[in-house]
Image (tube, rainbow, N blue to C red; front, side):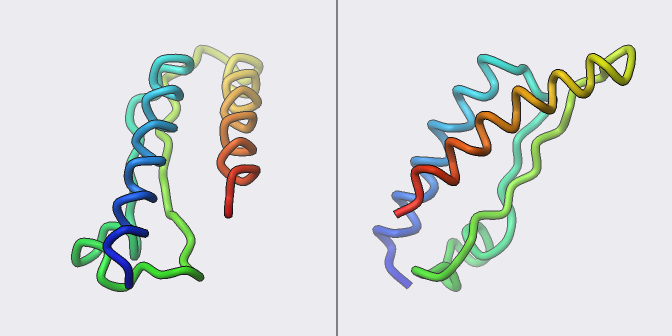
Length: 83
C-alpha cells in the first residue's frame, strides 16, 4: 500500500464529490471499502473505490431518472480518468 496512492485517491474523490454536490445536491456522498478501512492499509494499485451517492427525494420517476442520468455523466468522468 502506498500512502501517496491513498492520499491521491482521496483528494481526487473529494474534488469529484464537491462538483457533484454543487451540480446535483445529493443527500450525501460516502466512500467505503479498502480506501477508508484502516486508513487505506489494504488499498493498492488493483483496488477500486467504493462510493454511495444518496439521491435526493424526487417527486416522480421521470425526475429521478433525469437526476440519475446526470449522475451517470459524473460517474463516466471517474471511469474516464482512471490511470
